[in-house]
Image (cartoon, rainbow, N blue to C red; front, side):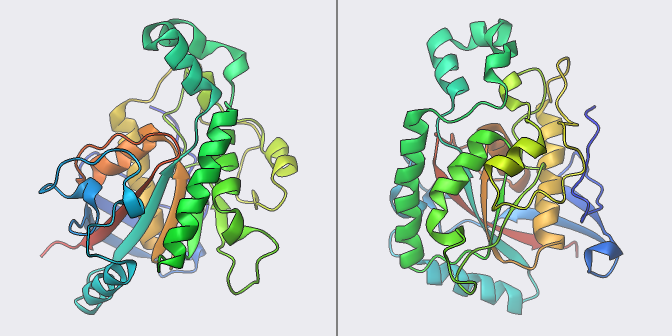
Length: 302
């Protein structure tokens, strides 16, 4: 089992079932509380998760909003849930742009990658390719269009791996740069939890935080408790069950330690699939630099 180093502002216990037992620490600024709840996907707004519709092609129009629906409709539904005592969050999850490791897997094949290439040092904390950078530029335009159409984001969380950080800085450049007015800039936080499946593959090994601080001086890495990567090991690859535990911890962070209702996330494919499994979303294969909106609600036991 991988030893989890949780974000210091959250103390919580994960389980391998969909029911979550959560302990929120007093140090977080919230009241300490033991909460048992279920977090589930709420369908009806996005084609990717609507079981009555065919699975769409990648990069669905308007991030997948169902025809006739608007972002204001989503917010109205969330407000109605709140009045009925149901907490909900809108998560705009994004997979990073194409990385050098993605190209290598396509070039050599999955079998050769797993047997040899995945262990090479040249793929440590794999960066974006030039194509991945262009994908992020295109995704930025899509994000801007949806924000102009009423999408509201209050915080962005990002994996500290290079391909995710670079994707984030490009995609959210018009919302989070230092040139934005204080009232309009979206706060952003890098953290360990939404990293890709850990272990063995060098592309998923994080470089030092000291390097990250130099490369991304506008991001705050102050809550990272280790300069070197404390999670990645060369001899153990996370199982799906272990990634699911980490995905639950991440969702607990969103629901029980963040006031933001609309949250952007820049992360990775296998971590994204874990999120989908945990909330009961149907299978959906994220391509590089693709958004998938997730309306998630908390259901307390009767």
